[in-house]
Image 1 (cartoon, rainbow, N blue to C red):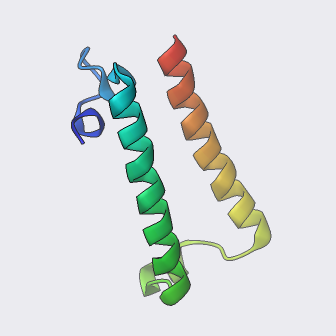
Image 2 (tube, one colour):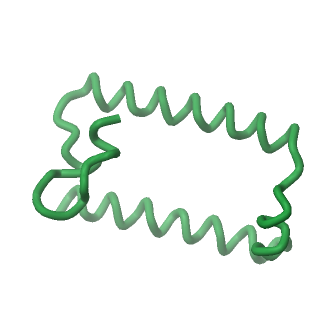
Amino acid sequence: FGYVLKSPFGGDGWIISVNNLEDLVGGHIWLGFLCVVGGIWHILTKPFAWARRTFVWSGEAYLSYSLAALSVMGLTASVFVW
């Protein structure tokens, strides 16, 4: 997890400092595993009380949360190619 825990400021490199295919594939395996485990967790449990109070539970809200996540991924990709 060294790439994720680096500071994105000051030239350390952060997530865009991945420099070999082994780390790239390994990171995708970890992310896939975490997504599957998180999906199972969310199917089996109810949202916590603070989350029910904080977030809006509608289709439009789900869409906006997904668009926000896509914008973060797009920003990371643009920093990577810059």
